[in-house]
Length: 382
Image (tube, helix red, strand yellow):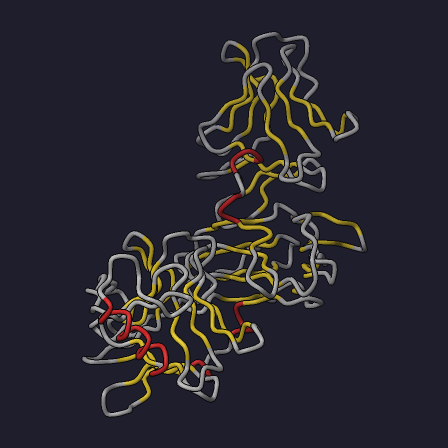
């Protein structure tokens, strides 16, 4: 049974994500030099800003630009992949917004007091702060603060529990455990039925591993860099990634990413075509058409002889509807929630299930399931 996440409200002003004007001399390059086409005076202003450790109201950082603390020890850099990263002088990441991959994203200290990372006007990260003349401070002590002109702290990095949005090397999620994005909108939960599910604050399933029913399954960020869902040592799902100290990030923008300590993205949910492993309400498979599991090992094919067949990578038949010979038969995920194989309107096979927006899932663990949008399993081949 899927457990819906609690709603988490944003602070006042968080919804406003206006693109503020950029003041002359406020944009910094990674070398602290003027941007192409800027006058010499602007370059000098940029150099001064680089040592001041402040991103002022209305200023922004585009990809490759940065601001340093006054002592030069800490750097706030807007990477070209869309991730805003806070580094020390050893190059170690102390904080990041988890907004990659989003090439072209911009970090802005908005005039309404909200510090944001946006792309094409869409908020990927925000501090939810409000106020006039508010600035972002890159401090000598390794803290980041959003403060009013009189010094009142509205937001501080030291108050952020980044680990709540991450699954780090060697960590695991058992049934009922979860991680949440910074803004509280997106929850990655290991359900007690064995399915790893990403849900937004409206209860919509954004992603799932399709590993139910497997009560007792565990999600692990392995030390070799592979994210897995396993039960009794058997892999039900994996990302196939490799690396040291890889971390899973639950992002504010609804994405999931696996990244190395230097921010390199090894895997992203945004690159996953989940529909290839699903047959959704109203969709059908005609002779020769198919769906494949995420790992590509299991194929559900509507054969031209009228038989709906599930096979593994070795070609072994795992399941079939035994509806051949019936050339021209079609497998349909009906609007009433029933999966059928029909020919000329006559039912040759059906699951007898009922429900709205039911989806057929071809799973990595060689199972087939029919599930509701909230993850409830109505039918499984085993």
